[in-house]
Length: 300
Image (cartoon, rainbow, N blue to C red; front, side, top):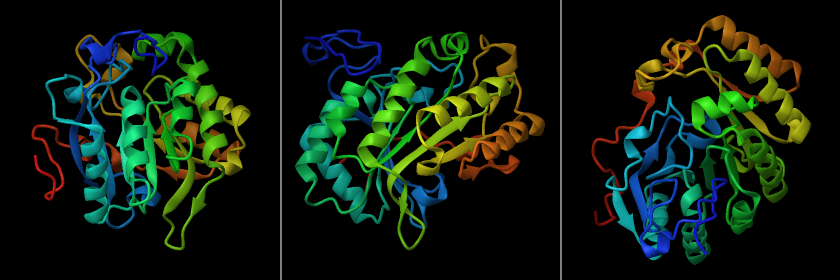
C-alpha cells in the first residue's frame, strides 16, 4: 500500500523510491536542527526550542517562508535510529523541547524514532504542523507527543484552495484539532511558564482576509473549549516570500486595522494566548536555510 499519511492520500510507493505529493521519498531528510529563540514564549523559553525542520511539505502555500526546503536535495538524510539520536543531541544542548516542524509526511518514522528514545527523552515533544492532518496519522503519535502546535489557516474552501491548493483544508484541520486535544488535554505550564502539555493553535492573519480569520476563530471555538487551549494570533505576514504570480492582496503587508479587528474578535470569543506587535514583521525571524545546521555533537 502506498503513502496515505497526509490528507492528499497520494498512494505513492515512497518506500519503493517514488516521491509523494510532499515531493519526498520515504527517506527522512532534515534541513536544520538547532535551538530556536523565536517561537512563542512558553515554547522557546530562555534557552530556545530544539527545532527540527523537515524537508518537504504536503501543503502548497503560495506565501510559504520555508519554501527553500521543499526539494529532496535539501539537508541531510537520517535513519530512524539517527533521528532519535538527533533528538537526544538537542536535549543535551539545553533545548526546552523537541520541536518537529512540518513533520506530517514523516509521521511514521518520527513515531518510531520517538518510541526508541522515549525513556531517555526528558523534555516535551512538540508537533509543529500546518494543521492539514489525518486523524489516523495523528493516532500514531498518541502518547509520544506532549504539545501540539498546529496552524489553523483558513475557514473558506476557495481561499484554502487558491492559497494552499487544499480546498478541503478546513474539514481536516477541524477534525485534527479535536483529536489533538483528545490526546494531550488542556494546556499545562510549569513553574517557569513553559508549556509542558496541551494545544496551542496558530493563526496567521493574511492581508485582505480578516473576515476569514474571524470565521476561523469561530470555527475553533465551536470545535474545542477555548479555555483549554492557547491561541497564537500572528501578524508576521511578509510579502517577501510571495512569488510574482501570487494574488495582489498577498503583495502587501497586513494593516493594523486588519490585525486589531481580528484580535478583538479573538478576545470577545474568550481566547487566551499570544498576540504580536508590528515589530514581529520581518525576514530576520525566518531561519537561514542556506547552510545545514545541526548540533555540534552530531556527525554531519
